Length: 239
Image: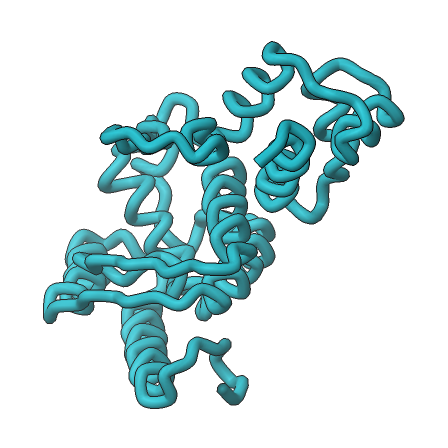
């Protein structure tokens, strides 16, 4: 592959990683500190990019140059960040999941394998209140975030981003062929969490646990329906 084709391929990979709500050209221009016209000329391979610019692009978008240049090596690279409650932003966390899921969904050949010790988090977005409980439990009990230590579940203001961004994540996830390996504990873990919070008195409304149990049952039935059809789709829709 010649240098012009490699440059075009690089920008094709980058374009697939840029969220739809962000201008691809503006993102390149801002990152390289150049004008949008200069960015266009680089994207169209009318102007060659320098090694320094390649390094900036590859680092920022986590692109493997070995793969781009078809260099075979024995290394395997993973990117990610450890979750930390200080600071922790639910908005940023959900956005990172959305960007990852959208990037995968845009691939020509894609598959996702998930060993599910709990429900794969995508499924919870079918039911926003159940999703809110899972994230509340996670923040209060797993992350031990002091901001949640004296807050009951119903008092936590469910951010609008959890509803909308969650739906966007689920929509992208439904476009990805996936194999999920479940066990009985996959379902039992959420049952135990709801029951645990009921015993601790972390619900203000005595009817909340039953409502969450019913939503969990609804989600399990929907997942069974998806499995029967061999397709993923939203609750209330047809495959």
